[in-house]
Amino acid sequence: MKKLLITGASGFLGWYLGQQAQSEWQVFGTYRDRPLTQSGITPIPLDLTDSSALRQVMQTLHPDAVIHAAAQAKPNLCETQPEESYRINVTASCNLAEECAAADIPCVLISTDLVFDGLNPPYREGDCVSPLSRYGEQKVAAEQQMRAHYPAVTVCRMPLMFGNAPVDSFLQPFLRTLRSGQALKLFTDEFRTPVSGAIAAQGILLALATRPALLHLGGRERLSRYQFGELMVEAFDLPKTQLLPCRQADVPMAAPAPPMSPSTVPSPSRWATTPPPSNPNSLSSPTANC
Image (tube, rainbow, N blue to C red; front, top):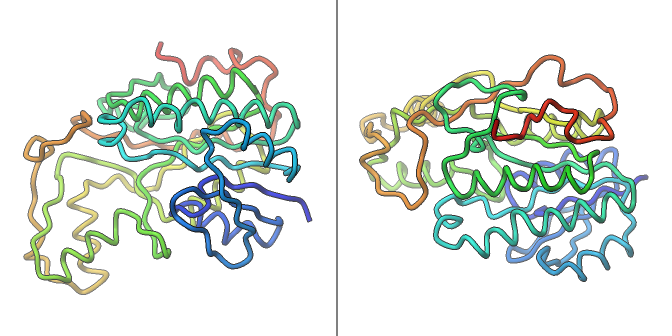
């Protein structure tokens, strides 16, 4: 059975990827701070910012494919710790791209819909990026620089994700707040296209097999966080009276947020199985700032 290396395997999305990949792959997963205890996955402790340690893992393991899900994905933390988050989100990603290029193996980068400013949703793969936050800027840099090092890299831009995994998504803190009897304030002016972790993992593994250059994996419905909360309280039989609508301007945040957060949809042609171009610039610059 071929070997699949998942970076950030102890995270929320990494857990779903590990669960679903085991039927077709021998799965290995890296972790740093949160231990990886998932059944069926061989854990590898690794600080991805240590390029020598990363190279040793790649040359010892000889994976047949890599899914790069590790990241500092908290926008506010990226805003307050820009140098450290850049090392994780950009520098380590480029080092990994170089290792995959040397081995000539498929590599998928997990990116975000926050590479867009949210002013003109929904966004398709050919739309120009326009990040507002430092996190979005770092993900744009990772997309561009990884593909510069290795044009065969596939970029999957992910939306807000939810699910019932051992690792929290944004859903679990909401539920804990409501079940404790507290009020939960949710934005009415931030719209996303949420998708379950299970469906997201299916899409990423399909992208690994088909290897498009760039893919948006947004959900089918465009919802505000408040609308999502309404569905949540109905599904879990919780009191709707504890849901309080608010606007982004009401909540101080370190990272600038778009007035209408981005929603992404895939272009139908992106599921074509044609190989990626040898020149990353031949993609009509889908990750360029235009």
